[in-house]
Length: 125
Image (cartoon, helix red, strand yellow):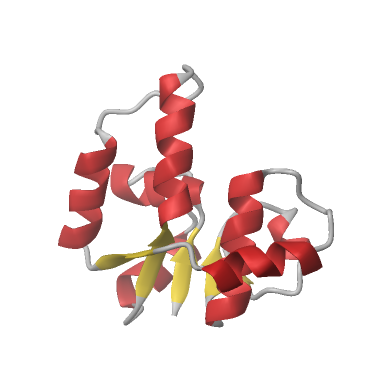
């Protein structure tokens, strides 16, 4: 099982060269791929304040995920409880939540983010 970091999702949907060949292969071959609902929230916020250009609406991104068999992982209370135990390596609240979800759901995060890779969570890039 894998969970995509927000940038990974956007690069995958855009078929961007920024996505590593290992990440792309992993996504294409994995049986279970997830994105956090926090990623959709992050995309909406960053787009609304002008920090992210989008060619899709958040609803369209959700539909693309469904078409590509990428499931949306909801935020659960136990994910939020994990925030209390998470070291303060990364300040981004969305990434911290994705890390907590990965820890609780025993998933590997597909990310280029070096700060995420410093946590005791499995990553691929």
